[in-house]
Image 1: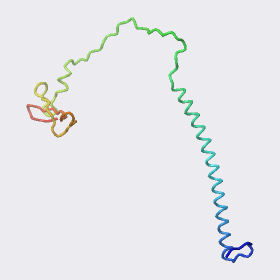
Image 2: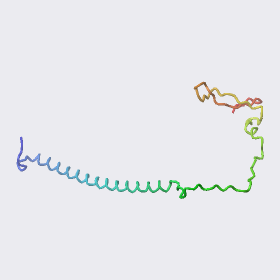
Image 3: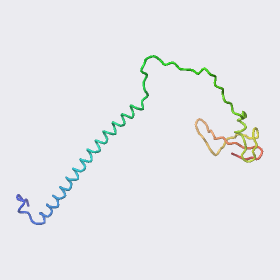
Image 4: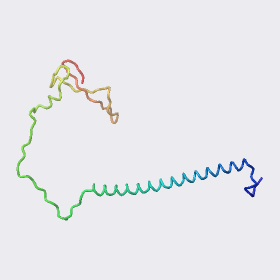
Length: 137
């Protein structure tokens, strides 16, 4: 049954109509709030993009103003090279933590439990073994 006039509506339809009208008004207010929030976020986005551009311009290296190459100044003094006090560095690397044996008593062997790669062939990690006390490290 169609109603041409809203005055002829039954009371249950009038209640439903009023509920729908309040829902519509609530949705419109939410829509307005979201539009305001969108505009604020767009403004903030524009400001942040400007700040990013400024930071990128500051981080770019300054280009040379003249087309001529600058000369490199070489110090005239000879700088002494520093040598380590212990020249036997290899022995320091090969030292058993268990019995403190060093030098040729430490062997380097393949650790078959840890594979580095399968291609083109199996390659294993290396481990050190003390020949005196058989300690592996």
